[in-house]
Image (tube, rainbow, N blue to C red; front, side, top):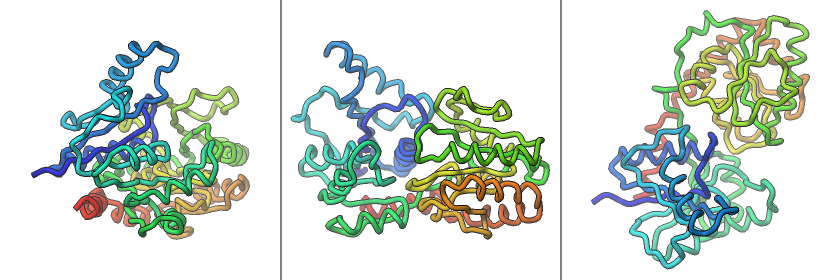
Length: 349
């Protein structure tokens, strides 16, 4: 008999998001492994300016059509919670909270069901650290994506958390364009408006590189509108789909990340899997897959000059660039879908 699991997300995602992407990925993968999978969208803050009746119909429609940027298996059931009410009984074996805003809801709403809290970052964005820490005290099995998160969560959790690192679909994220044929001046970066992504430092570093290497061309993607002050030599794609991101990664010899703090950092490892050599800040999450001077070059956070120096070194030194990439391509094999799914199956046993 199939086990029935339900991931709970706070709302439907109009734009690409790394955290939501991982939930959708696991939903599809577990669905392919003979689980009955549902995704519930709480939708509590959606379409608030509309009357209740219109709002109810609207969130139901959005749940049906979203996400447009990620293809969810047709056999995965999507549920709009709002405004069904708290008395509805659901036939699940496991319910999985996927972010801070769903943790308390899952912990107290689904009586008699097994509960898991999938923690992808220390989510103190606009809330107090205490609120985040209190969520770690909830009576749920904790699954974390990195070693540094485990250390934090286990201080407060009643039971030790389980590490399941984010997987990479190596059939998708792979070398298509030969690394040797790529321009050394082709560099890429994710653009994001959130301060913790450190994009102001990445762009400042790239300006330094541009001054010494006028042939520099930067390929970038993100969900925000192109900012007015973004240099014209940055080629920016808004809301790139998966195929487009793979193409961008494969255009680049170097991938730049200036993150200040993040749970993992998907674009860094995706770029590595596609053959781009990573020049990143040494934030906690990147240490799950990046090793300085072995498969990448790392510099201190908020240090545009140090990041620029590493980018320039990779542009100038082809032997170093390809050697680091060789090691990265070997290391990313440990992040296979198979490994992560096997671990999830032990949690869902």
